[in-house]
Amino acid sequence: MALFKRKATGKPGEWFYCLEHHKVEEGPECPAKDRMGPYTSRTEAEHAMETARERNVQWESDPRWSDPAARGDAD
Image 1 (tube, rainbow, N blue to C red):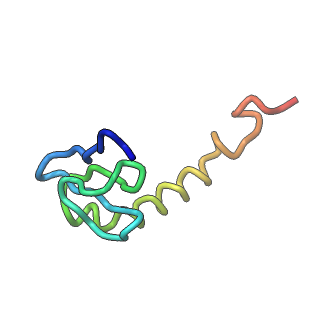
Image 2 (cartoon, rainbow, N blue to C red):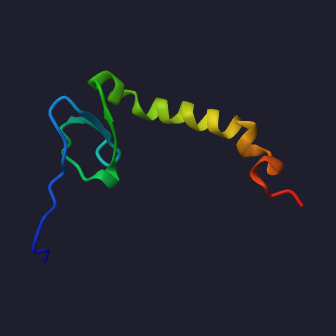
């Protein structure tokens, strides 16, 4: 049994997307390991997964990350 229970920290007006419950929360409600954010608006938090997918595509297609020579892996 834990002696101290950590409370999620945040401020009203900060929005988060909970990965465990698949919902938007203000505050936040869930632990940091289960959420994305903070976002400046509820709408932005609602689109968190879309934003993450778009950023992953950008990252995966960035030649600095897909070119072994740019990473220093070339022999």
